[in-house]
Image: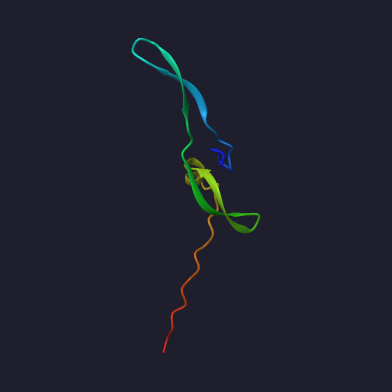
Length: 72
């Protein structure tokens, strides 16, 4: 599965490790993705979203079903 947020499209960015001697080697910064259940087109689905989208409220989570309590 791609390391990409399904809401905002955030994906890995690239750059360099820089040593003390200023040697440059390639590296990647990965987005902080989580698999969550969210409402997509009216149905609950599992999607990969970044934590910034979860915190900002862009992800609508489904409500939890309530337990039926037997009385009597």
